[in-house]
Length: 97
Image 1 (cartoon, rainbow, N blue to C red):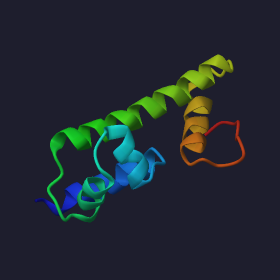
Image 2 (image 1 turned 180 degrees about the horizontal axis):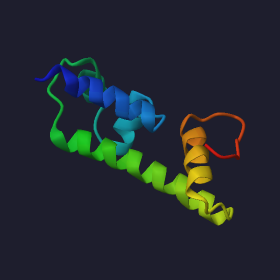
Image 3 (image 1 turned 135 degrees about the horizontal axis):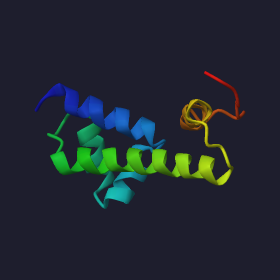
């Protein structure tokens, strides 16, 4: 198994702000299975990586839709806010990049 697969799993989990148990529940696999993927004990099926990547995409899309609902249409401001939302900061920064 390529070592980067487990690294990629952990990276994607961090992006969607899910723990291994939560991700296992979302993906409908056992906690043990997810732990094995994340620590590199077991090869990560491509479908797991693709499913986690899709969760990241959906979270970003949701953040962008929220910005549009709030009436923020300038791309440079929206990109800044999306990055702030992705980092889960407690303050919202509006301004030019």
